[in-house]
Image 1 (spheres, rainbow, N blue to C red):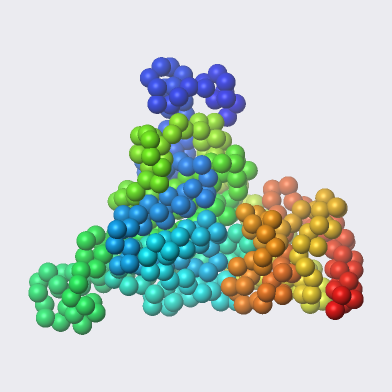
Image 2 (image 1 turned 135 degrees about the vertical axis):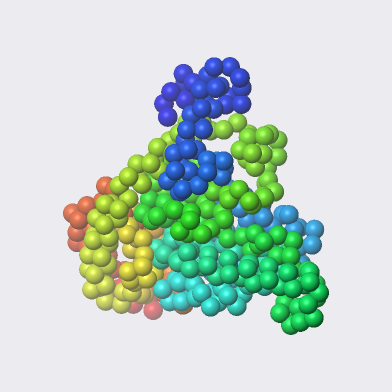
Length: 400
């Protein structure tokens, strides 16, 4: 990244030499990322982070239908990152029909729920790859097959309608045109893969998605840089205006150094992904086993189908913020939910969605590991934590 802060600090849109060098560096970075997720370079759109990529995907699809919003339908899940969930709620406020799929106690979406939720006027489905709080991994490939099969059924309906087949109404439910009569790409399938990028396969063909969000900050890359994979057949409305950069979907002078750093980070984590996932998975399982020996403690998320670096537990009868502050004094850094809402005292919507009541949800605690995490560090936590839990429960009992 360093040369592009100084020596080659040129505008990539300019024709002079240092601008051309910057433009070439962006093109090379695009090629690195596209090779990892197995798409064409022109299908990568650089943004200012995961939140912006999610917003571009969601509003980019929905805004094409905004004039008749009430006629169209959107689907997402109850455990999405706020960048997704809040965007859908904004669109619901603008008139779109919205279905929020529930999850089971492990945080998994039931495929049958998705099948039942799809309608002829569903234009967008967004299901995250791996949850940022509880680490549960969704079967995107399976959901993709459901969506593609539904598209096929709708196209059959369209053909029957065009041929004036008398029983079309019984197949489609009405004689009106659905969105799929206009274009077979609907419903479009989007996934937020920010948490998954360092640990799971991002092969687009295997995932079957049309839009995919990734970012730099979750893979030891720069902050405030991200990308949206957009299948070339998908047409999006921009959410910003003012320039031709990124195929007119993300105007403004590109953050060249951050783009280069993002691509390099993704290349590095991808090269060690399988080895590091195996290492962290062993540490995760050891940590979970020891934590569940604590009285009145439960694991949140799927016991095995989860990110290798994620441990989320609920300590009953304790406020998670109290544990967090005491661990902070020991230079042990944990979270009570999403980092984007670290200042909020509201219980996590993810923990509530998997069936815990608000009281227990307040006791949820997320431990995340990374490339520098060792068993010795985990043992340090396990040595310090029991006394903290015991002391806080005594205080809770006194207050009651």
